[in-house]
Length: 146
Length: 146
DNA sequence: TATTGTTATACTCTATAACTATA
DNA sequence: TATAGTTATAGAGTATAACAATA
Image 1 (cartoon, rainbow over the protein chains, first blue to last red):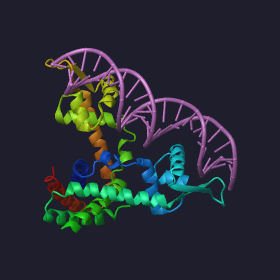
Image 2 (tube, rainbow over the protein chains, first blue to last red):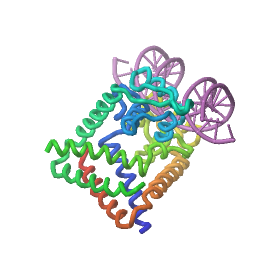
Image 3 (cartoon, chains in turn blue, purple, red, brown):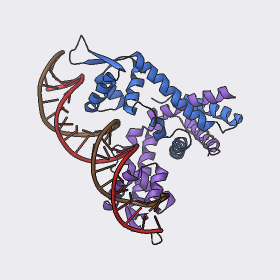
Image 4 (tube, helix red, strand yellow):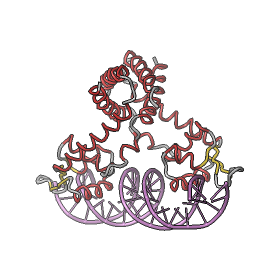
């Protein structure tokens, strides 16, 4: 039903706005965390996909290539990555995460989870259980999209 | 149960990530839309709360006061707002949205809804109906938070 | 030719300190 | 003094065009 799709897009936008306002404010997520957002994104990317070329990271994270250069430079000088030339293609630079990147990943994950828990804690146990069920079903439906 | 809260915060983060990846990418939302994000935010704010002082907007949108000045200047020169001095307190500048702001609000809303609809359209009618139910129940639980 | 990564440049957003005008 | 808004400045994000080196 086309009307239901229309209703869903409206509802979904409302949901995103509410989650953003009441639980995880996009700004708050990066405030008071010492590593800038773009660096965190690259660290998370490398953690998930392993060592990758600059172009690959750029494409997948939708960061334009010229903007990758200073990000990679600072990640390097801050010890989050190492880089080396691809032996099969000298144009390509491979970026490899360090142990410090893993520590940053864990710290950031913990930071975000604590923020979310603090905001959700006023809810009753019943509501928390129900939200868990709703979230899991939501995720299972969204997993059909790709 | 503390464990359920912990689980929920983890699930919720996964949900936000999935929605962001599969339906409404934060970057895509502002790409190819001619009015910059901060301007859109102010326009949406004024649409919802009506004419407001610069300080009020700054506080509610978490935009620092020095950063309001160029935003207000450009909104003014682009015809989205008018401004006048508060007759009761000459320190205060009142910002008033114009008809053009209302048009921008409607265009932006439409733009976002179309993006969401396009991304959700591969789902079956059953899944769309179910997502509508889940979203509404989700919103009703979140409405208890404040 | 096409691709990788860089340089140069410009616009936007964010944050802080110091200032002025008014209350 | 306290508050409203501005100026100045610096750091970070984003986008495009032009470039050198390599394939």
